[in-house]
Amino acid sequence: MPNWGQVMFQDAASSVMFQLISFHDHALLVLTLVLTVVGYALLALMLNKHVNRYIMEAQTIETVWTILPALILLVLALPSLRILYITDEVSQPSITVKTIGHQWYWSYEYTDFMNVEMDSYMLPTSDLLPGDYRLLEVDNRMVVPMQLEIRMLITAADVIHSWTVPALGVKVDAVPGRLNQIGFTTTQPGIFYGQCSEICGANHSFMPIAVESINTKSFMNWVSNFAQ
Image 1 (tube, helix red, strand yellow):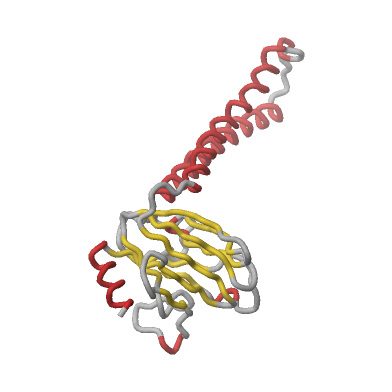
Image 2 (cartoon, helix red, strand yellow):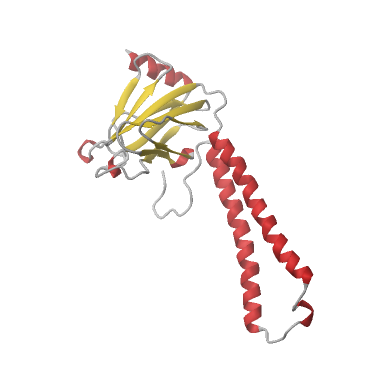
């Protein structure tokens, strides 16, 4: 969960989100260096009244300020492409969960087990318990085992939705007639909240996502109790 007044990312709960935060810091460092150099050059040009006749038509400096930005773009592009491929990679998933976006709730189907499916509605304010988060708590959380790769199959039944959990680094559109896929691995136990990130109608703000990460033994007990 984010804190009040927080301006940075939520704490990462998956390896992909760790990579995204690291790349964000890397890009900000490069941007800070570029802005510092450019700002100093502009300030020097405005305050300095002298003219250096050796750089009025200097091929060397023109070559430098053409090649240097290209190298900076490579420094940004190569890690970005690497993370892009990492986020799209689903190698050996342990569990597959299919989620279907509706107006305005989510359905979850655990396709590896028999009769494990549920609808997830937002809890109204009157039903919240002490410690629950308003507009984020649901009646049926999506439960997953931690430190195992989860494959998500995401679609929608009516209009375009978007299944988004910031702490896991997951944001995938749920498109009617299309099955999108993404994989993630939770690194720690906890409850991670998200919301639909596609404007899907009047109650777009009232279809939250709650992912509960637990250990494998507790997950199997949950599946056994749910199937009964």
